[in-house]
Amino acid sequence: MHPTVLDESHPLISLPKLFDLSGQVAVVTGGAGLLGKEFCRTLADAGAAVVIADLDFATADSLFQQLQANGRIAAPVRVDVADPDSVQRMVEMTVQSFGRLDILVNSAALDPKFDPAILASETNFNKRFSGAFEDFPLGAWNQALSINLTGAFLCCQAASRPMLDQGSGVIINLSSIYGLAGPDQRLYQRPGEAPKFKPVYYSVTKAGIIGLTRYLATYYAGKNIRVNALSPGGVFNDHDEAFVQAYSARSVMGRMAEKDEMNGALLFLASPASAYMTGANLVVDGGWTAW
Image: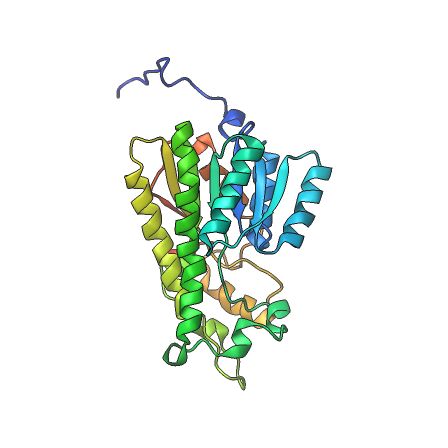
């Protein structure tokens, strides 16, 4: 056994400091979404100034008002991640407002939901077609790729410039268990109803996110920019009991995740606690992919 050698180049950091983001600036795309809101609150609670970036500006602004009322530092911004000019304006606004950009969380994505509120919407993605691969519209495929994958590419590209200028940065890309394994389509079927499917673009884009993460991690080797992915399992959002039971039966932990159960992993990846991690994919899935 060799003794642990400590030197001045690697000083010990107290445990609270490992998760302290004071003085840092974070951008969360999809910041008005189910997990995006949680991520914004978590980063703000850890001391970061948070830019809540979303196509839905009204909801982003509402979250901003809540954070501000609680003494947190934040700003809302409308962004279309598929539009390079919109993404560049988001980054420029961040740097102009806060002087830097330390953390990018790519959470924006098209994800056809199967919770009651979405299924009841007349404009719901699943109302227009079943998601069946044989009939999947090319337009829907291209739209999804432009948001889920190209959007992450554009945000990483724009955010990396100020990170390179300041000599540091952290990028966290949201993937999914369906980027690691094919969807269990049995979860989405109901007796007596027309078939529904988790569409092809979701698995493909989420797998692509992992590839983008690994590419950027190695591309920025030696630049002090860390790039990791976070892959959640299914998060409960008022799903019907049949879906919850079917999903839970496939999970080692026997349940779906609660929306706040990704926060610890997100903070870990954003903070100095994960200083020796890059190019990794942190899976938080209740054991779904362990079977």
